Length: 84
Image (tube, rainbow, N blue to C red):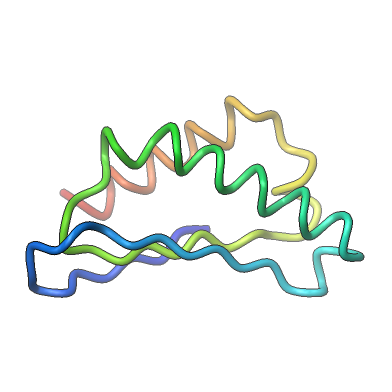
C-alpha cells in the first residue's frame, strides 16, 4: 500500500516505511521492510517527484511473500495513479 502527499515545495522527496505487528514477528517485519526499501530504491528515482512524501505500508500475507517483480509493478502502478 502506498500513501502520498504533496508538500508544496521543491525539496527532495521523502520516503517512510511501516510494518505493523499484524505482519508477524520481528523477523517477518524486517524482511518486509527490506523488500519495501529495495522496491522504493529501484522505482522512486524514476517515478517519484520532488516535493512529495511517500509512505510504503507493509500488508500481512502479501509484502513478505509476493513475488518481487509483482511488488515493483504494484508500486509503479500506484505512483502513476497518484501522479495523473
